[in-house]
Image (tube, rainbow, N blue to C red; front, top):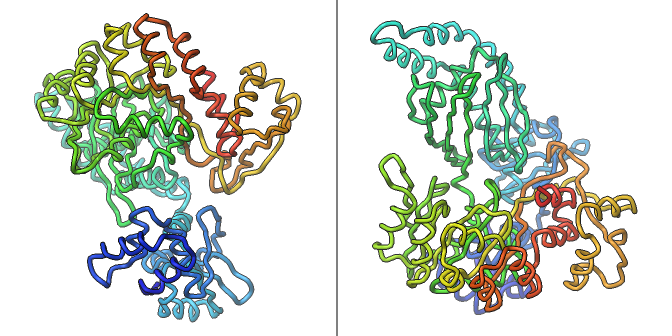
Length: 593
């Protein structure tokens, strides 16, 4: 789309979207006159990509359409073949008689428009759209997982006899070498390669965080973890298990003939559309070897604290304390609650050329530019404690320890926080207030802990309501009574009223509008799409320091923190439910464990 920098600047000034001084400053930063002002504004976070596209559409007089949450029928979608759609970023999304509406990134591409017009003998109505909209519609071209697997499975079963022969080898001295050679050859068979490629591709398309390949007595179950919940997606014949395992071991550079010990590895997949890193864990179980693959999107842009779900006073507390020169900030919660993502987001905010950030992690989830990341390796004696002690000699300003697991690591972390370093780490506790007693149980001196701990954060991840099928509703009297049996609903209601989350005229939850997802194609009929965090953030003030020094329990610490204005995790969840981001059922699922 060709809109001159001058046209865009004039429009933004007239609309008062960005101040003249800011625009002048950004314009000076353009490397050349040919570079796009709009792209630099988006890069700096001064404009959203959709907002820029809408601006382009308004200036050029072309309609703008947002297709991010739309479903397009196959017969409409297939008007434009997938290769052309991908190459030229153009998709058909609506048909009205002899008129076809197409969404594209560059409506000046008259050659492609003319080609589609001649092919369909229809009038083409071009609309401008965003890159996210195009990406979403392109995913609709993909076949279902079962459809793609149909022919591949039949081919794959044919190699089972070869695999059985391989597993039977081993009676001679060179049996292990023969087995490994046969397994490697089988792993390079085309049907097996296709199976793994399809499993990975659909996991990426469905935004899964993990793939589970689980052998049982007569078949193999494939499950995807989507938005924190496991879903059965495919049942494979037992005969191809060995071939699938061999292929994944080859990709991960693991020992093919080792079936008795756990193995861990990694591999990468890069295409024009995405770049993913896969962390592989293989564990021997009674029915064979179970595989879990963690998907790590290396092209995803860094999140902000607001996008993670922090709000209000909790957000202010974190923003203030991550910029303090020393002290300790701990994030707590169960496995899979997003603790590492929270720490990475904080490091991304702090990552400037004026500080030295060093980490000790197990494992390293994402590689971050200009941050010195060390991988724990217990086989060679590189533990958290050893790594942390070594990196203290690397002149760090900020230290991130993946997890405080033992007394030695904890002591070094506290000493580092006391001697002028900002320490970020995680801990396994159920609440923010339980952080202090837990560290004291591990051997921390109360007076040292009171003077070094700045903030304790507890968090859980909840699923967000699917925006495509969201509907509002009011709770009935029976629903409110059931809620009161699970939580102190009256107390929560009063606190939310004081926080002005609920209108002052409301007399109960029956008068508050909530939302839920009906279920649609976009969310696989779950009613949920995506996740965000619910939090409780305790800032250690003078009152809490006194309680820590006196070795008070978590209930006492929590009561004082709430008295001083801390919003509990349950209350934060209800706020997000009232804001129609998630549901009460989801809040209760993750907090009432």
